[in-house]
Length: 272
Length: 255
Image 1 (cartoon, each protein chain N blue to C red):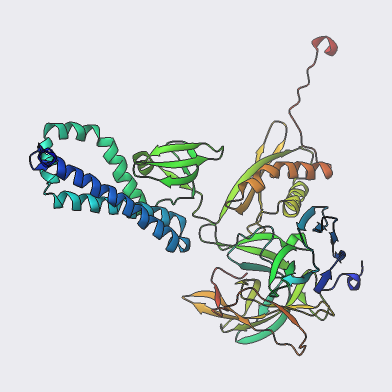
Image 2: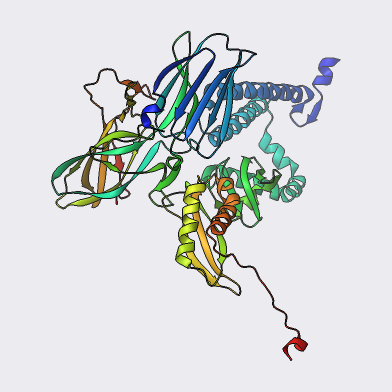
C-alpha cells in the first residue's frame, strides 16, 4: 500500500518517491554546504580579505547545494531540461515576470567578477544618491549602510549600471571649507595664521601635501578664503567637524575680523 | 626642568607608588585600597589618561623605553616614515657622504610579565605632539600614507633623547650629476632602537641610500644597516622577530 503510494506518478517520470528522495538529498546538501562553509570560515577565512571571504562563502554554499540538486535529479532520472520545456507557456510567462530578477542576479555576478567596489568600501551610488559603506553584495541586491546608520538595499542591476564614486581607491581624501575675513585685513597674515592653527591642532590633517589656500570670492561683506585640507581617507570625522572651529578660534585670537552681513538703514527724515 | 632630572629609561618596580617625570608629560602610578594599580598620565595640552591594573597583589615591574613612532595618533600607515629634512643635503656626483639626523621616537610603557618575563605595551605617548602627524609620499592616486616628522641634521650637539633618537645616514650617489636630498621615506618596522639606561641616549639602526637611475628616473634605494656601538650595555627595543632586509625604493621623488 505504502509502496504503491510512493510509486504514484506526479508527472511523467516523476514519482512521489523520487520527489521525496530529491528533497532529502537537497536537505543533506544544505547540511554539507553549511559544514563546508563553517570549515572554510575557521581554516582559511582568517587569512583572507573580508570581501573575498564573503564571496567564497556564497560560492561554496550555493555551489554545493546545486551539485546535490543535480545529483539527486540525475539519480532519479528526472530531466530538468524536459521539465523546463514542458512548462511551455507557463515558462514564458514566468520568464517575463522574472526578467528583473534574472537581470539583478546576473548584475550581481558581474559585480563580484569586475569588482568595481569591494565590501567594506565607502561608496557613493551617484544615480541613487546614496553614500555609505558597502556592507554586502547578495545575489539580487547590495546593501549600503549610510552614515546615519540606516541601511539601503539597492538592486544589483541599478548598482551595476550606475556611476559609482569610490572613496577607497586613494589613501587620502580632501575636504574644503570657506572662511571670510574683513576687507581691511592682511590676507597673507590670515592665511599664515590659519595654516599654523591647522598644523598645530588638526592632528589628522596631512603635513604633505599641506593645506591649500585660495581667494575664492570678493564677496559683499568679506574676502572669502577657500581652505583645502588633505587627510587619511577614513578620518573625515576627525578633521571636517573641527576645522571651522579651529580656524575661527585662531582668527579670533589673532584679532582678525570675520565679518557678517550688516545692513545700515537710513531714515529719510534724518538725512534731511 | 633640566633633562638630567627627567626619569631615566629602564625598568621600575612598583609596590605602592611610582612617579615619572618626562618632558611635557607626568605619570603617576598608585596602589589603591582594593589593590589595583591606578595609572595616570597628563601631557602638555592637559589631556589626562587614566588606566588601571586590577587585582594586582604583587609588585609590578614595568619598563619605560623609546619605541618606534608608529602608534600615534593611530596606527593607520604602512609602517612608513617620512622624514622631511629642514635643509637640503647636496650629494656630489659619484660620491659618498655620511651625516647624522634626528629620528622621532615615541615612549612606551611595558608591563613585564612576572612568570615568563614577556613585555606587553601598556601605554605609549610622545613628548612632542608635532611628531604624531601624517604625510603622503607620492600623488593622491598612488601615494602611500606615512608617519611624518621634520628633522634636523645633527652636528656635535646632543638631541633631546625623550623626543629624538640619533640615526646615521649614508648616501651614495652613483649618478653623473649632483643631487639634492630633502626627504627620506622608508619602512621602519624592522628597525631596532637602542638605549642606554644611564645616559638615556637613544640610537636607531642606520640607513644607507643609493641614488641611481631606474628607467630614466632618479631613485634612492634605502637599506637598513645594523647599529654598531662599543657600549655593550645598550638595551634593545625590537618589534618583528623576523627581520626583512629587503631595500625600499624611493621612486616618487626625494626633493
